[in-house]
Image: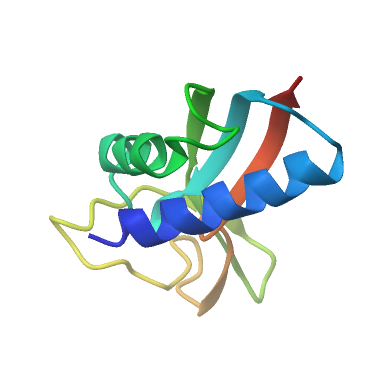
Length: 117
């Protein structure tokens, strides 16, 4: 369960940024979590709540959006790929031309916005 590790990094970064701006309390956080982070959103939310206790992040509203996997091949085809890691392996070939691809989206863990007082 690496959700606690991911949550620890998120909490630490939010607190550092909030302190830079002399915030006394964080009331909201907007996160973008790529599907390839392979985290369960409910478990991540629980970990964030646990690790936020007794910090300026305690009781903040946490909004999370899961971003899909997007691949791009050497021919320029860009495709969103649906993937269920419990059902099939991720295919890293272009569905259009069958060339190899680069993952251009889906691995991120981004703090999009921090709302503080």
